[in-house]
Image (cartoon, one colour):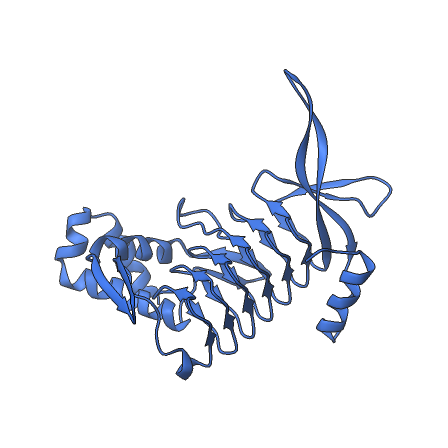
Length: 273
């Protein structure tokens, strides 16, 4: 992997025309995307108790777009015209895919995943036994953990650029309610529960209201948090208005029975999902 990283870094500093004409560079780029597709390389890794973004992997993905030619892709009666192929051989990989779900080549999907009609972009990683429900999107480079439930109509953003930016990261055993939007590199720690319509961006206030005084954080929902959409008042030149935020209203129990823990959290806090 270190050799591939060094080769990509060297190639990145060359002109784009070299990427598509130098056979050695092309082969290295293609090999890296194949490794991402197999789950052997990830855009982000959890090391030493923190998430590390591998900028060189992002560079390889961007370079891959440059060396690929537009092609017609036919799937039964459907026709697509794009640079990136779609994933195949789901049966052999132990993945359930409901038509017309689409996952791009260069994304990794673990065994036991269920893809309802949804979309998974290149560079994304989806852990074992995760559900991606109907009309949800998993953006480029988004990192989704094991046993995560992404409900219908959820938008998980990807961060391919800027290179140094972390992608959206959702850790193990998280529940994301319907029509939530998570973008700009936000981080949802393990076992959190987000009710329907929670929107979190890099600038969204996440306010813990479970104590006597509110605690404000940004970009990260702490583990086991139960979150609902909320608002706070903010003064502008033309008056005072309500601005969206996310409210942490409780904690999900650290239970060995994750399903029981989830159901209890949903009932206790009357969450819409």
